[in-house]
Amino acid sequence: MEITTESIKQRGKLIVFSAPSGSGKTTIVKYLLGIDALNLEFSISAPSREKRGNEIDKKDYYFISLKEFKNYIKGDDFLEWEEVYRDNFYGTLKSEVERIWAKGKHVIFDIDVAGGLRIKKKFPKETLAVFVKPPSIDELKIRLKKRKTESDERINMRIAKASVELATAPQFDKIIKNYDLEVALKEAEELVADFINPSIVKKTKK
Ligand code: 5GP
Image (cartoon, rainbow, N blue to C red; front, side, top):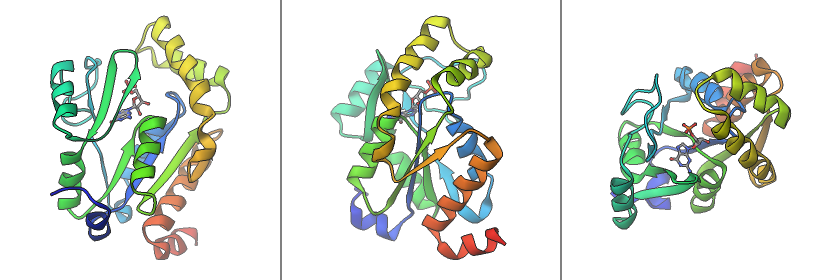
């Protein structure tokens, strides 16, 4: 099935969470996935980068080679893709979105700023694009160092990119300030519930 605006109307909605890495968007997305009433399923992306220690293939990501990635580009198989970091490509396969729609669910994306805006541009009405803002660049650095998953060089690369990404925040539908995680989680839940089905919000607000 080809993904068109018409097919989205019949299927689920698209919920995009984008942010500089270390902002807490993955934590927010995981929290939302745990709320059954939202009927969300995670869009598993395909990156060309190596698998990290605790990651699981086909659950966290579909790990593919750069050659496979380029073949998917040639075949027009991606809904969106980006070279997120130099020589590290990440993309959302059209087949992934179709897989989730076939289950009657809404799709939630944890993708970079450029990819998120691309989905919003393709499907403006069907997409809720949320930007998660960290308290500051310094706090971002502290969070990334705490993860202990990457070298200082890669952390610095992520920090440099973060400043550029922060400037795109106004292009998103909503900005969530992740200064206090509990507050950010509740805000995210209300936003998504309201977008998917306004009647759910009334129930959770009580
Ligand atoms: P990481 O290497 O830390 O898993 O992810 C790096 C960045 O790539 C994160 O900001 C993540 O959200 C983004 N990303 C993951 N999957 C995709 C995708 O399919 N498309 C785009 N554009 N970005 C992605």
